[in-house]
Amino acid sequence: RVRMEKQLRSNNKIENLYSALGTDIVPLKKSDPSHNIITRYVSKDRFADHRYRIINIFSMGSKYENVSSTTLPRPLLWYGIRLSSIAACIVKGIKPSVHQEYDFKAIVMNDAVVAAAHHAHINHESSAEGVLFLCEVDLGRNQPVDQIGQFFPRTHDSVKLNGQYQPDSSKEITFGSYSVPLGRNQKIKNPTECESVYNQYLVVDPKRIIPRFLVRIVAQKIDIPVIVQPVVSTQHSSSVWEYQVQDGWRKYSDEHQQTIEREFREKKRKRFTMEIGDNSYTIDIENQVQFQTLETTRRRKMRRTLQSKSE
Image 1 (cartoon, rainbow, N blue to C red):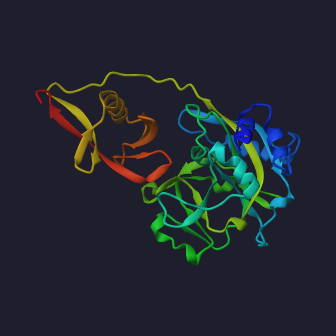
Image 2: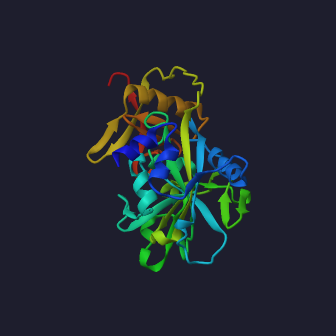
């Protein structure tokens, strides 16, 4: 396994790993129509200050045909997992697991590459390069919900946890037996009702998932110019931003205070992302809440108060 992981991290030896695993996996030629579709699927969205570029695409063979349903077309969805687990998934298949927010086993699929890359820890700060599965998924009896507590897995084959941002449905295409959501993610009308930032598809039975492609991607940093303007305060008072904790309210650091206050005063964006510690957080100024980006079930309230300069 250690040898496999080392090969997977090598820029030129990924094909050797797949050969060693005895799998029917071959590089997909750029002239193949699927290559163009997948490239568009990857490039349609970006996350905060980085985007994703394809290095290689590999087609997975017929040994993975395990879906008995005749429902067509079926969506092509992303599955992200840590690099160290890729080899096991190739050999044994994608297995359901108990998510920290859910009390039942399921496989979490995504229609936004940024969400799957987040699960696989692929970003420009940690592991800039990684591999994602692109799978044909038979959703069966699917139940769309805004809150995961509304779903009981024994009554359905899968659940769609609606996201605050969803692909433009008018751009969805049918390609062979697949449906591919190529539309850019757009903010829905009532985003605060949804737990997740992007759509998540929770599939209970792994037999409903056919891995079709392995997509090797790299995260590339986007240089976004930041115009820093001084925070203007009144003569006798200054603003203080705080977030709610179990025992009350806690102030943001001075640096974060200035960032939030600047965004609040400029009124150009209703929400933005900010690095706090080792994590990326979404600061929703309009609704005055913060949450760890892509892990949206845990939210903290925010507030802005005015304090006299003598305090």
